[in-house]
Length: 168
Image (tube, rainbow, N blue to C red):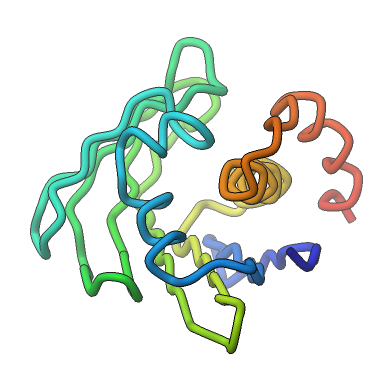
C-alpha cells in the first residue's frame, strides 16, 4: 500500500476528508472488507450492521470512543464491488456538540494488479474533520493490515503519532 496523507478541505462551516490507498488485492476482496460486518469488526468498528441495498440501513458502533459512538444512516449508493456510499449520522455528545450529518463514499477502482480505494467523508463540521483525519488515516492502515493478514497497529498509539501531521 502506498502511504499518503489524506486531505482536509474546508468549505464554509463544513469540511471534506479525502484519502486514496492502493492495495495489491482485487476489488472484490476490498469490497468484502468494507461491507462484511464480520470483517469490519476486525479492523474498523466494534459492531456493524449493513443492509446491502440503496435505502438499506447502516448501524455502526465505533470501537475507539468510550462510550462507543453509534453511527446511523441509510445506504446512498450500493454497486458491488465498486461503490458503497452511506450517511454518517451521530447524535450530539460532548465531542460532537452539534451532532454530525455527513456521508462516507468508498470507491474501489481496479488498476492492473492493484485496486485504488478512494474514501471521501463529506459534510463534517470543521472541528470534527480536523479531529478525524488522523483517525481515518489509522483505520486505513488497519484495513491494510487486515487485508495483508498482519497484526493490526494499536489504534490510539498510531492516532497520536499521526495527529501532528494533520494539525498543520
